[in-house]
Image (cartoon, rainbow, N blue to C red; front, side, top):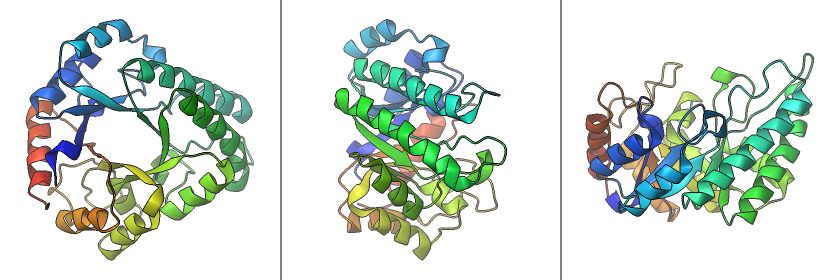
Length: 273
């Protein structure tokens, strides 16, 4: 895989400030970064030092490519309609911050808010207008919004590319797909199943998250090669559909994020052209 297409994420460096995380990504060999904004780094609720990071970026060659929008702890205990509206507003404020850092793309989780007695269809009904509002805010900032395939560890969600496509058809906005390989494997898409998910994303695929999985019902965000994913086959599948975009290595950094990120990048470089 072409190293120029690889992007590091500040999620791998949870113990560092945003500037410290960006510096770690730069030292690990990345030219671009995805900035995490749920609970830390660029989350508006964490009062980020955006001006300071803007200054850091002007002095360094690393560029911010994308921002991962917040999704957790949004008005806990409030009615679902209020939570969905608050989430859309929070994501909008995050997009404003990401735009200041130069981000061209944003990733949203399919957050389905529900009240007691709500089924999944009702939650999706509530989700669609919230995502429309976020997409409109992204477009106003000339940013591409993408929707990520998720797993059920956090409750009802959109898991497959088919789920994502169905929701995006109703959103009726130019929103792409962020295919998370580890989540796809968690959801049972391994081997030919993973290739099928990549192919199903097709022309909507605008972003990826790459990490390995142990395939036993967890979401460990392992370094590629430490789990069950056939990475040469996955890289070939992305190449087979002509995917032209970036690949974010969303691996858990552990006690030594710099060493972990260097190893993850090295292994993907060896996975194929």
